[in-house]
Length: 108
Image 1 (cartoon, helix red, strand yellow):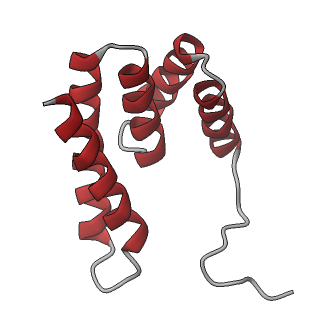
Image 2 (cartoon, rainbow, N blue to C red; image 1 turned 120 degrees about the vertical axis):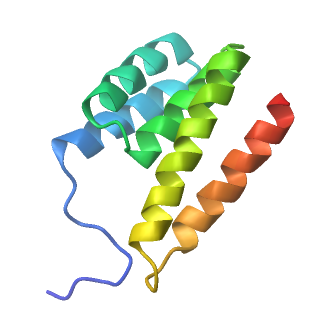
């Protein structure tokens, strides 16, 4: 079986928990999502998706100061990933960087 380029097949328990937190957020359960994303970020401080999810959950729950702070942290995580992947496929992180910058602009 050949592994397709760009398709990740090695999901972990942590990935499943991130997915659960995203599901809570997308279903409007931001308080529960914030709790879960917070636990995830406490365990893995530079995890881009957990940080981004926490920032979005803060934003949609009206906690704009916390959202701004978390989006800034997310940007730092993204910049770290971009620096690690010089010469590699960075399109995902570049897209996320633009999205985070747009959210920050709406919170300015």
